[in-house]
Length: 266
Image (cartoon, rainbow, N blue to C red; front, side, top):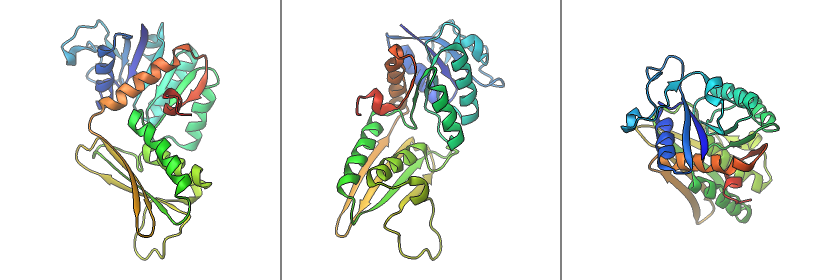
């Protein structure tokens, strides 16, 4: 069985990941990590599920990685990079579902993947991964006379905007259209903005309530609109995708992968 370490185990995604590991006969929980000041430290990782696993929640990543196969991380950029360094040192694979990385931080992930296998994706959902491919295909066909806008909505607790998934969708559209998202993205409009530049890709962000994650890519032409939408109703979809990614790396020695690789969509 694949020995899995879950980082951020007391968070919403951590809970979904633990549930996924407990439900999969091909996986076993090797260790559960949380921040040093978490009230969950020292408690059994299965307690919230009515299970006794013998795995105590810890903040000692070095000990947690001993004998492990893969670490799955949905936290924040700073701890995620700390986990990445520890995985490099221990020779352990890593699945990174954390978002909000800077370009410099992404380069560190790329560098680490030269020595260990890493699946890095802003969204681990199988449906979103398919959506990315559909956006690429649509953009190649709707490459003239269609304006591209991306609308995303998440719960009130999400700290980064636009979402990593929205940015990845923007990259998919931009690449297919032969554009650079860094120079063509518009992240907000206010006041007298003037006529829309046909070469831009717009982003709109909504935050509120308990929205798990909604994403729509709009291709707006004259007389018609094409909308590609994905709506997540449960974090289980992200957890199941991340654990699928963990299994994907079982025979990999190194390399940087995303969910399109995991699902053989390339």
